[in-house]
Length: 275
Image (tube, rainbow, N blue to C red; front, side, top):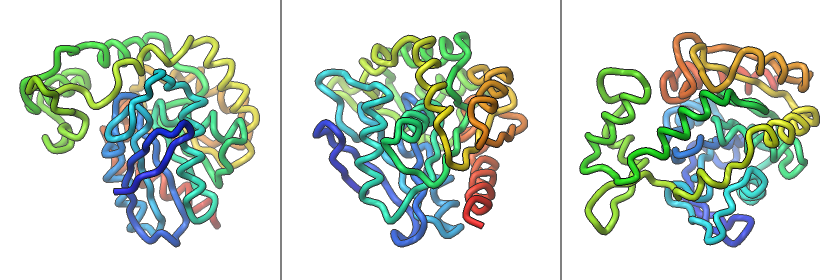
């Protein structure tokens, strides 16, 4: 486990895999997740010869909650820069959902100098219906859970499966035990109030996409209701250096639904950019 100081004196906590002198790859999780969502992909990256680093975004997991509730893309990009400055060379950035927006903001505004960018089911704009479904799920269950098993069933229902997915220990990483003995999501509830207007964000991130000048890979889950095919086409027109691949049989949570498949795609792309 590692600790860094973020852009506003906040604490950031994360893990790393592989040789610290190897080419760095930084993995950024989605909203409401923690760094542990990347543990399988990070391990595969380490076995492939890279130094993988995953950290909890501000307001998530073990990282600090901000007193002023600043969970904007800009603030998260500045935190990312603090982590990157401690690494050995220009990193490849991999971001899922919220983490991908952080990557776009950081690289497109020249806050971070990256070697390449991989966006997991996220671009400059998102489907309002899909985002509403995600935010609705995150806002529910404010009363917490009596057990990890109960939370696992809720997650399985959200993903549309009939049984809980993944290990209970993995589900437990996304929960915190409160003084009342109940388990709550491991993120600051104020995060949902700080994400901004979707139209304004799409315009800002679209401008960032135009400024990307490093190899960029956009990966979409075939059944995603957050990243629409027309948005993919628009992003590719905005960002001529970007390429695109679709992972069959999965939805928005493609890094969790089919972690090994996503890891294979990411490793192949990184190797191509370094050849």
